[in-house]
Amino acid sequence: MTPLLSIITPVRNTALFLRDCIDSILAQDFQDWELILIDDGSTDNSPEICKGYAKADTRIKHLRQSHQGQGIARNKGISMSQGRYLTFVDSDDMVRKDTYRLNLEIMEKRPQLEILQYPIVKFVDSIAQSCEDGNDIEIICDIEPLLRCWLVEKKISSYFCNKIFRCTAFDGLLFPGGCYEDRYLMAKVLKRTKTMGISKRGCYHYRQHSAQTTRQPDNIEMSRCLLGAEASILRVIRPYDSLNSIRLERFLNCLAHAKSLSKALRKEEILLLNSVMPSIKHGVWLSEKPQISLRCLLWNILGIERYLKIF
Image (cartoon, rainbow, N blue to C red; front, side):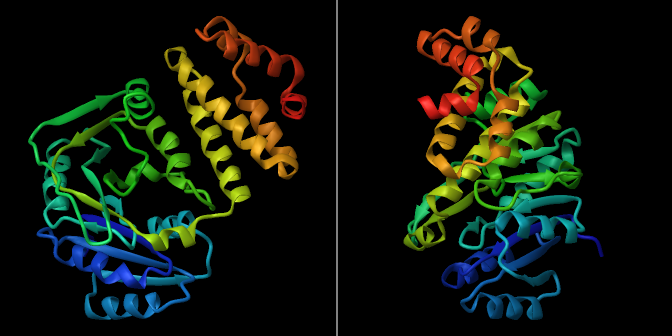
């Protein structure tokens, strides 16, 4: 029988917290779901934990792959999913037991909603804060207001884990490998979204713990991923002059990441920077900051490669 909701959880060496995560799904007061556990080459006993839960409950599926990164694991989960709706849970986090029921009720009553975001709180180890529930639903329509709510007003987070998506939201889209995959793909998802809701119901518990530091990429990989994510955002916001200040800020971020790569900067990344570089119009005439105007003039005149070598 086809489930209403597909829950996708990449797993990578989180045996210490994995049972808490899966148990929070099993404890949901909404039961029409499938849980897809994609083990991304764990070297601890996470695979055995996944197998045990999958054997005990037919709604839980488990697949093991070589280590390719969380984004690739999510892509595999999406390809396996059968639900009308999709959501994501990181394997060291938890979900409050009424979260899916309350928010799917909203989406079922409002078929125009393509994405629904619900509250997220961070907690350290076992100390969790509670979310304050409310009945108000904020509806945001059209790409420009959505981008403003995400990049300027910060009402929309870059997290995929505190959102429910209609399954069609990911048609033709893939998470990248490497890190910062949420930030990279959120721009593309919002670009094709006509209507999104922000709910005050339920709660996603995002766990912060010391073991996370062992999963951080090295500085070169991090800069490379951040450069790709910022460029993805720039491609989406480029047509909107009302977001010009954000466009300039994001491009300066790109230059900072490129500078940190130094000699490791690749030719294709230079081409990428040139493809998303703000024009003189946007950087000089539309900028309110003389320092940014001057820098924009220089990188347009010198070209990105020479600019980075000089400055």
